[in-house]
Length: 503
Ligand code: SF4
Ligand code: SF4
Image (tube, rainbow, N blue to C red; front, side, top):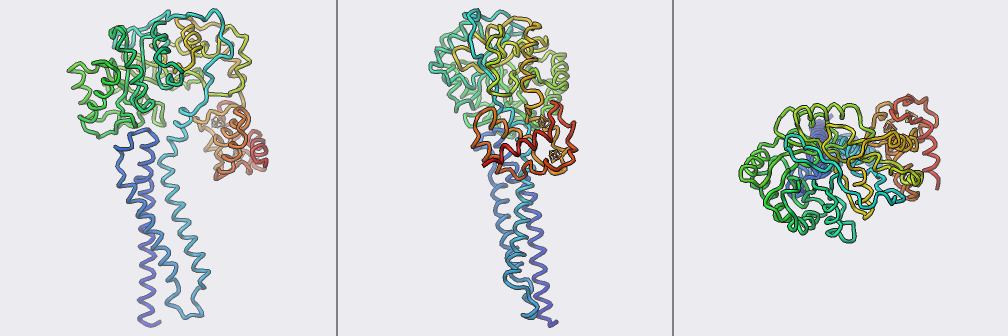
């Protein structure tokens, strides 16, 4: 080979190595750049606070990798005699395969960063729950709060049934609706600047100014109207978010401010947030600090909350399908005299089963609330009121003990969904499948098909899955027994494939 030929071969090899190195960097930044950006947005951090630069760099690197790979593929064989050099078609195929593999790797590392959040948390947010009984019973009418409990070390006696304000703007007269809820004795009001772009706080504030402020426990979160305040934000940013809330709520203090939907120790213990809290507490703008969490890192975050001794209240997803570790977390927090607030108290499930409960004297929601409040360590539960009936239906459960009839209602509900209802946020079975079939996604799409009657969308979503349940028809089913809900995964999956693949 001539010297020129040797040099050209070297150059091609070098371009190949450089392309490989840039791809490696692209993959790493796919995780840490775009992945981190998407993860923070998925968590709900205010978009204006999430740095874009790492994501931009990773996209630029992706393009650089593609260009280098194309150059490398084009130059392959250019040092060889024409007869031995690969054809243009071969170079094209080689380049396409290399670019395709690189892009797949980048997508994989990016998705790896956010997969945990979507698998565990997205279903918590998106879970469809039965929130209204099909029939309102006459004896619920005019129900009033009958029981209050101390909210841990805050000492405030909060109504056992309390108001979440994430959805009350759906009511045709939200101010009148809120007045009615207060008149029935609800005294713990949970809101956040990022509910309806701060409109929730504004509408609540219109009513709160008419009320005796000391009789109410008002809770908001460290957020802006566009999302959570990001960890590492300045003390001033935290304080400005709080001041905006105070202004909208027409009050000069809130009783409690939460780190909202917290999934990392860094955000939980952000020194600037803690400093802002201390300052606001010192001048009376806020009284107590809390945290809400239902994320992939719930356990880690919850124990860090408890061990830090910095938080007065913890708000956790808690319903009659609670896993044992949640009971342990609540026990440990209560032992430190933290106030425990339950949210997401209804078990997400089917949409068409509620008519079965029409003749029950207790509605499913009331039975579920009584179950939650049967835990003496829970101070109150927060539920989204949005229909007129909710005032009677929900508040009727106040102060009532869990009875065998309630347990029967919950058992009936569980029976309705037993062996068929997949709680997509558990994902316990996923590792048992050697074919990486997204069992929870397949079963969720089936739920859309069967229970929500949204057949077209279900089939579209199913066809967009990277892997479908085709493999289940002939598989030896190592997933057998992997589902704690006793779902017969293989049969259910094979059947789902047939249903969802129909034209
Ligand atoms: S039956 Fe389906 S879900 Fe179960 S292991 Fe086989 S391919 Fe995976
Ligand atoms: S099939 Fe069972 S184990 Fe798998 S995600 Fe659904 S509920 Fe969880």
